[in-house]
Length: 113
Length: 111
Image (tube, rainbow over all chains, first blue to last red):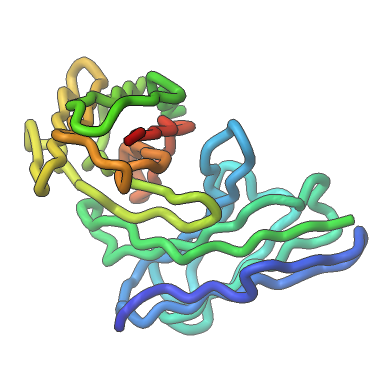
């Protein structure tokens, strides 16, 4: 079955450590996205990539970094510079072109103490 | 900057009732608008996508409408069932294929 896989489902880290969240898709989609979800705030866009080897900052990119070396993979690194990293992180992909539905993974819940 | 508002924030209805969820957005320069469903602790599932040139889209018991000029969309759910209980989010897609989300409507359908 085609889909988006995020791993791990739960992640725990100590403050000051960098952590990388995995996102893999086998839908052959060009565009990939990272969102952060906090209670009562909806989803906010962190980074997105329309094509391999290219990505743009979203609305809340500070303290995060990404890479897009392969079409199917878009890992997100939460750095120690991110002030409030505890959140639910969602990865999504779409065919691109402005009229394609977004497909989501099941998310990674990151807790930093 | 696009701002999206969803009303009501929460809704509880008895099984079988028809209901309407509302979504409003401030920037009408959109390519499309999507409605999603999110179950607790899960990712989002796309329900309907309405292109900017369309007025409505239907899938089973769901019907979504779009009035781009007034910045409004509604999701109509017919004959609601307990399995419809979830959070429903709307998201217009603007420049750069960026989708902005509302905070959602939490729906509970009771037996």
